[in-house]
Length: 234
Ligand code: FES
Image (cartoon, rainbow, N blue to C red; front, side, top):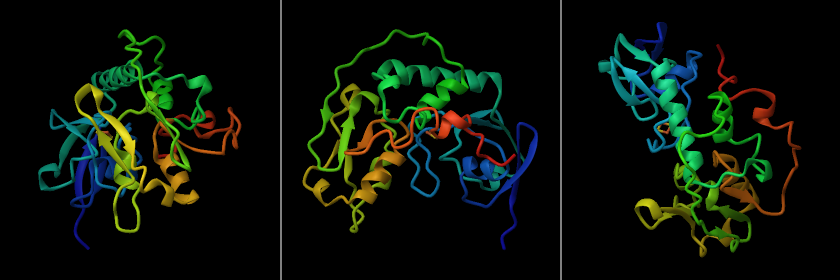
């Protein structure tokens, strides 16, 4: 078995296998690096930058930076006031860029963006709200797409695929108009299991499975019970 590569995160000795992403190696070592677009086992996107850490003083996305020889004995900063402040700012920006009405959202309590806002004690964002006009899509049999809540993390594009490995989702338009789109020709072939997976993989409430709601009441959902990151073994 290949020897593990050692590094320190906030002074704690950790190690990982060559090629393993820092965020996963850290989790195995009991260190939570906050994230939104990361999903263990799928191709990273590096789109949200919430997982930014400093490797030997250099800001890097922990979900796209693999453990390698250049990481050997590296000193990684994670929960420093500067990085935590930056993460809070990203969360605030995501809130003002979309329309997040948590009290009426089916994903409330299971939403990673909401859970991070609680983690960073976000009250009123320091930026003004954009209140953008976003189109909804309820035309597919199993899913309801609410772009008001989409944070463009690409998790659905990367993880929800048919048997030929073709994604059900894609980005449409560009720049500030970039939006998530579900393929209307493919969507009728989506089964309940995959629709549920699409909803579960979405870190916010942008993808909801139709004909199902409030199965778990508010107050009893994942982050209602424990704050985000507390499932990491310390
Ligand atoms: Fe690393 Fe989003 S979790 S960039």
